[in-house]
Amino acid sequence: MSETETVPETGTEGEQRMPPVKGRAGMPIAIYALYLASIVVGITSIIAVILAYTSREQEDYGLYTHYTFQIYTFWLGLLYSIGFGIAAAILMLLATSLGMFAMALMAVAGIALFAWFVLRCCTGLVMAIKGEPIANPNSWGFVAARA
Image 1 (cartoon, rainbow, N blue to C red):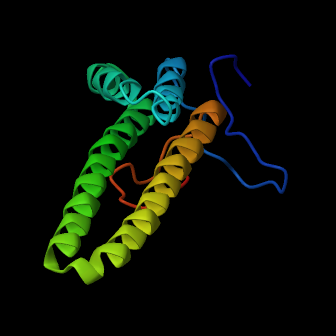
Image 2 (cartoon, rainbow, N blue to C red):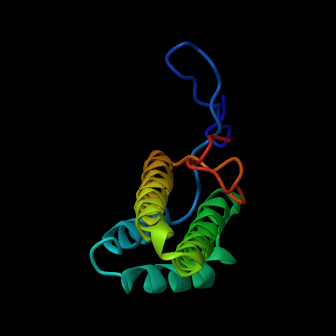
């Protein structure tokens, strides 16, 4: 076997895994960390999405999937937040008797959005640390799926 030949990695049960992500995996990891930091300091998510946009075209496909997933996370999170806010405001304006219901609905929606955001960031972070690409970076779902 020559030195330039590569052999796919095998997992614990002998199944073949995709080769690790090539390139600078540190940037996607830093962007996921900035997203998670935005829970406390909101401005870091804007910095993170700018970094994702500027880094996306410079990398191989594996890292490209992480950047695309991060960009979708930002815009979908913003879209969900605005949508939930508008829905709650409409419910509160319809009738004063719906005010408490609208507040409860807003609290449930906020918790769901928070869980969605944290799960997307954490699963993407774990996959970036492992060096795995994301199978469907354009998904609207909760977690990053393995490629």
